[in-house]
Length: 224
Image (tube, rainbow, N blue to C red; front, top):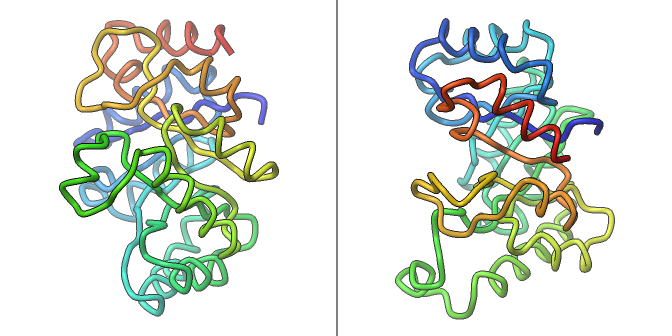
């Protein structure tokens, strides 16, 4: 895609969300709507954002038994998303059913490991090994299940690209500089993630909380 930046648009009020998107839409390639936005605004909010003419990425991270996830995937056809997330940790059968139930043209990507987690967090949940090991295992499983790609941090995307050469890779937790990392732990710059093979760059707070969101979006675009 010409501009891989998807703005993470998780704002509690719909009008400020639309106003922000109007300011930056010339400098991004799409918009990511996550759980916060979807729970606050529902289907009406998704349609309101879609009317602004950019591809919509529904980051709902489905994780349930295969039949339930397949039903959820069918239920969101009406929103015509370009990308939808599920949790790769739900297992191969769940991923297979999710992909089979997705609308034609919608990319289904498996979330491997949240960028707010590190090796210590993995150990506390009973998972041995490094974040890289965990991501690589789940990426292999997602590829075998027929998904289009995965979500991973910029620290792993290069290795995953070597393993899955035609995969579609979504990278969140990006920060243009070293300041304001918030609750993210495994971060890289947008340029680094793109160079290493990211297909989509999800960027939220560095744009949405900037003093001048348009200037921030334009500056990030210029680095790509």
